[in-house]
Image 1 (cartoon, rainbow, N blue to C red):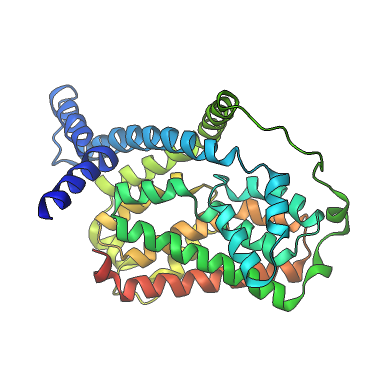
Image 2: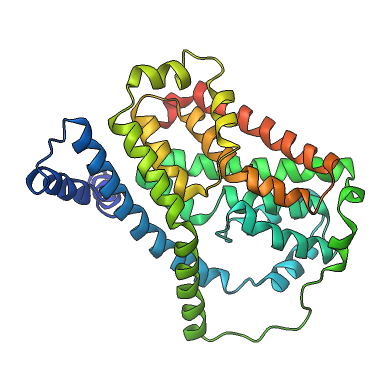
Length: 338
């Protein structure tokens, strides 16, 4: 049994964490660039090169696989599947379907409009809207590559729970009247879609890789750059004072800092990695990631164009409350995830 565990541990380190790549980049930084890994410049350069390569390799591979699966669930087919369910089960299915759509918060809003106009309950569409940018299958692998499988799976579970609860609360408050009238006049095509051949699905998946990488690469590089600065230049004492366990408002601060930013989970992971290395609690880090991905200011501005203030405020309040609860809970039980 220990042999199997050792094998999977090696596989995890080799394929996901890519420890060999980290060592290779370290040798490059020392022998070619002439920088010591114990110094701030060398540590920052190693972090930047290693994380950039690792994230783009994993991201491209995972998006190819996930988009191939997603080719079986175009918007109209997804709407028909969701339309067969009601109540909390519909919210749960909406949240689950959000996990196979690798969209940022802004990219999810057109689908939200389409689903709402097609007659789906807004609670279901909000469960989708929360889940889609917050949790996707690629995030599980990337979180495991940086942290561990316990944290990765726990993040996905609490993200789905938050999406289901958020959608259920909005359903219970019956806030349909606060959706802008024009939304109900925007329809998805009702035509039956032709079945795609395997070659077409592969082409669709590859195009998704190209489109998504084109869209996210600036945010990934920005995230890796910020992570490299935190990793090499910002003293641990300062990070600990602002976001450490000794600050009872660390989760609140992380959430407030995250909301004005705009990135997807791939851009926030390098920052999260650097913060955890500096001793920041995992709950505080996850609160930051969730605030950036689910509540970015640009997405809230876009959402305000399609819903009225009471509905937007309810959505924002429910998600913020959920993020704070999740953040403090993870910090309280963080030892279990190490």
